[in-house]
Length: 389
Image 1 (cartoon, helix red, strand yellow):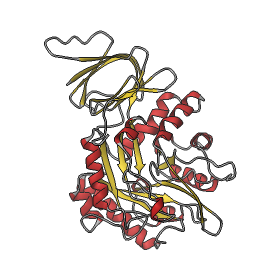
Image 2 (cartoon, helix red, strand yellow):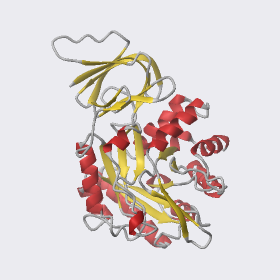
Image 3 (cartoon, one colour):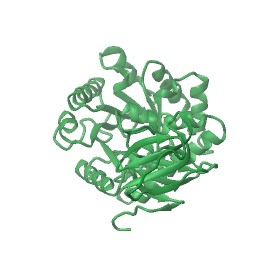
């Protein structure tokens, strides 16, 4: 299948101006000045992008594709994500994980869900594990999962500084990070240790000790949910200044009654003020995971579900309010996670890269999308449907 996206305003993330983008199969094969591509003798689908902005598809590096939750009992298990949910959010690549529940949610089921989404058109990867250490795996060890299971790119989401964690010791945490590093090296993958941060007072202590007391580099671990409170965000900014990466959660919605939680836009403003390197920041959704609220005694008092749509909502807000340039916003939602997780074919509009493309109108509303060269949305209508839709 050959598709010509004609006369779009391209942000690769770098601004390239008006260009034509030619897609063949799953790849971008040419980027030229408008009108320079002439193809005869074959059928070409032409998309008029003259009034559109074209950016790389979002990479959601933390999504509960199998459903998360369960903190309030079996009835509070969150539902699985659908391919329609993903497409309507501008996401073309997703990394799935388990959360609090590593007992009734299984790694084998997570892997099967990821494979199913890929058959439906979305690029998928997964983390081995849940909140707990020792981690739940498919093969019996994180080493083997990384080396033998193509979709496993790290361990996560391992909970620290949270009353729901397994309260791992520093030695347990360090050994897991070491296993991720060596497993990543042997498999040619990122081998990331993806850490869920709670609102406990120890915050990033475990991560700072790791990079201070061992030879493991700060780029081996990434803390997520770091906009949970101001103290945690301040420490996370310091972590970036020591060479680490951090992940903001778009799905966190500040509660007027809860002054600690920070919106993505406020967190980015603070990162800019503190001169945190934007190249070391990613933004994920926590989609289909629960958003529980606990009282000071640890009792669950309310529960909602995160949505992947929070990504596009925050992207639009950051650009429209001039908090970030369009180029920098694209980096946080696509290019940076591609770099950190070593997804070398993702995160850029460039010849030879995967044709994961999102088209936006002048108000930054999603109108069209392509995943691996396959059209998934056209003029605001989802084209690719789930198997049982």
